[in-house]
Image (tube, rainbow, N blue to C red; front, side, top):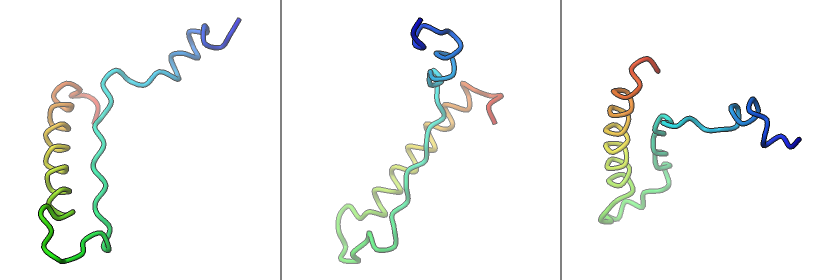
Length: 67
């Protein structure tokens, strides 16, 4: 019998159906060149962080007992 057909093994290796969103990686200090790029890495991070916060709020509504 293969391990893939073992229900206990499948249960531990299957990711959750509704995983918690992961925060974006902040830019490193050297990622910004300070030349006024549009968009700057800090602008992109700010947008990604806002999206993450929205996704996390929605996830928390779906999973109120998770925290």
